[in-house]
Image 1 (cartoon, rainbow, N blue to C red):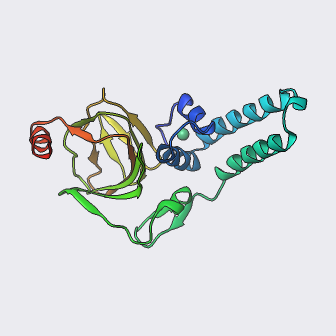
Image 2: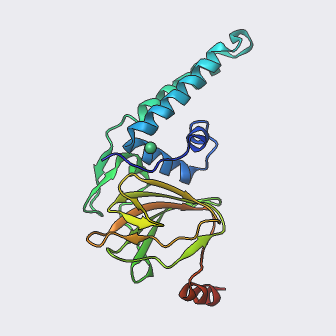
Image 3: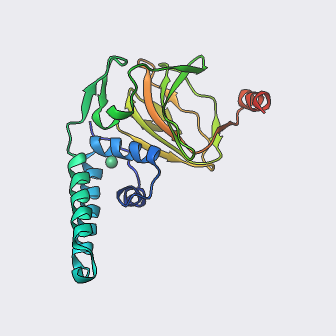
Length: 214
Ligand SMILES: [Zn+2]
């Protein structure tokens, strides 16, 4: 089934032009590897970029650099056409191939609460990339963020603010969004998440957690 929630055009543009940090870029790349619609938008951005470069006065450009840029654009277009899944023994479902390089052989799960565990895939100053496992039927306490939260569902699904997110679905939230995602009742949900700051719990239990943690 095709994803229903997509990155914005501006975000795809940032991704295509290398203006997005690594961790959210991986999420956008994984989404595009599962989404024909965004792959086509990405291809058109890349082709427009290539045409723009070709239109420039070539005499003023180092022709070797131009060839390198065009080759990179070709590579990025090929990348999204790759076969989309691979088997990893840590999981009982097939993982998007674009994530393969970031999944360690041994996953060190940390329990965040009775229903959520997480493992770090990329550690970075700006944005981390983590994989989250939400136990079937578990509802994450209401929280908001002090920065951006990029999320993509890998397997299973969750409902959040009356919207359903299944495999391949993408979400970008900021500090104006308060939410409390709930995993499907019959299946654990696996997501990749990139946060540029800590989450801030806002419900009554959440406020107590914040108090204890500070
Ligand atoms: Zn898409």
